[in-house]
Image (cartoon, rainbow, N blue to C red; front, side):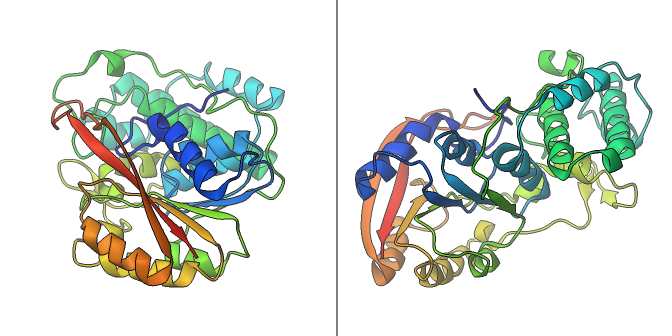
Length: 333
């Protein structure tokens, strides 16, 4: 069973076998069941979901709210007949001219007006019935709305801009689909919405830590602000500018050329108290130079570099679609 995915910069969906096999080979482990693994930068949760299906105890984290919601649904929530029936009811709702339509479908063409109204109707209905739902059911449904909305968004994969003309997928009618159909997960799975250094303080001893920090200076809160808006759905959130950026946006030091190295240094110094193994995906085009990564790792642990060539993420309207190297930096404390 698969996870319904976002069209996402840096998604590791196509690299899951590479990540899995690297961890298995380096640790000598061929059975991952009940292994405790931390996914520090969850993103789309493709990595965490992969290890959930292998029976791991997954601890997932992301600073962005939309990623936190998706991780909650992907790591801690199960599909059920009750959720299936609610989704069927949501797909029968009439559209409502709400705050998403006003801010992101009328003048700002992130969605067609028809789809904006459908998303508004679903978000309003979800908040209306929230008191009758378990927390896991609420997050499962909210994540399903976010990823279903993303599939018909009129954007060049990221929300830094919208297209002047509607693309074919954006003209399709919004249909709510479950983010996944898994019905079992490890009972100790949990999800955080924390800055990564603060996350370490909340961890006990874990088997493995997997990191996939941002590679460049593009802030995810600005590239995916519309998804945060759908997630928060708060009429008091202040938005501004041509693209409707949210005024209060969380900025990550990992996206700062001047701060990313320091973040990695502090993380590697601190995480050794919680684990024996760190695996960090960081390609050869990142803002931290490879020589500095090597220095930071070898200062704190034994280091190994595992690499493979793969096709670069292709944006809808720009970006060279050539090949790049995906590196996994392995640290053994």
